Length: 376
Ligand SMILES: Cc1ncc(COP(=O)(O)O)c(C=O)c1O
Image 1 (tube, helix red, strand yellow):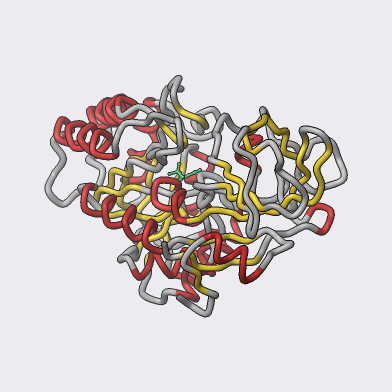
Image 2 (cartoon, rainbow, N blue to C red):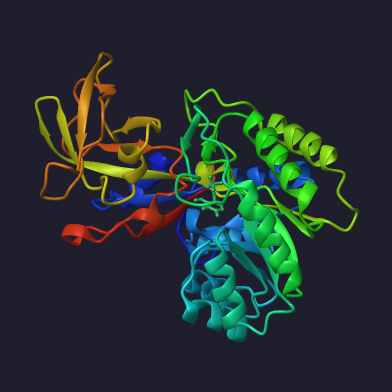
């Protein structure tokens, strides 16, 4: 696909490239499978959250799989999507936007859907656009849930009172109104969607009828050991929650998944550049593709790849260090790997399609950018 080298397996990548740099191994079959399943189950329009993985190959694969609507957080994401997919629709879903970004999104890219969670943001939006042809979606705060990895409502979203007032102002300004929420990323509980849709119901009792209900992202990836319920359970909770709202038939229902679509679409092949006792020094780390393994409790699967020789049967717990010249570049905990792991071996770190390359910095001059397709 799209000019990238193709391989049948990770082992073949190691044999042919013997890479000294980290390699993103993209997996079209996994991506297409997740997109097809989500689109088939969700009772509305699926927007892909570009921030999760904006790699052109990922975007092309999503587009080929039928995604035509995109949740964009910034003007540069909007410009990327507009240039690559002229017929696609971008939704500006960041609750805090610069005036210049609003003006450019509206005038140059035809963006008509915007999120707000504060009266001043609505005033900004109405001042910077002609107004009337907008859909303004009000983002609600949701209660923190124990089994959600990132709570987003500590930063964004408004309470029911504010949402009612905002929706009345949106109607008074002649715009279409909507209600959105985000239950938090890697949410392990379908009940979080039930609760959030219950709050939407509270708003709807006192506000003008919304034209849009946006259930956000947060759908979990099935990370090894995470034990999350199947996607079907989340969709059932959403369908039941929507049914209770008694929405008019014309209501547009949206979701903005990121992680659930792309987490399994990529693994990373890193090389061991030095072993010191029980510590392995790798060519990628927490300032590169592995930030989430340090920022969150998420544990991606790690396996050793050695070519041309067997590995020890017994295993040992290793500390994994990244390449930058500081002591922060280390993964939490230890990883069980063959006891004879050594310089020149590779590690495949799985399920790294979400928030990996998207978070990578250029700190110390290390920047993972090699991509191949592995179609196994
Ligand atoms: C507004 C918004 N929508 C969607 C997403 C995607 O969330 P997830 O990757 O958990 O599905 C995010 C993630 O931060 C977000 O902020």
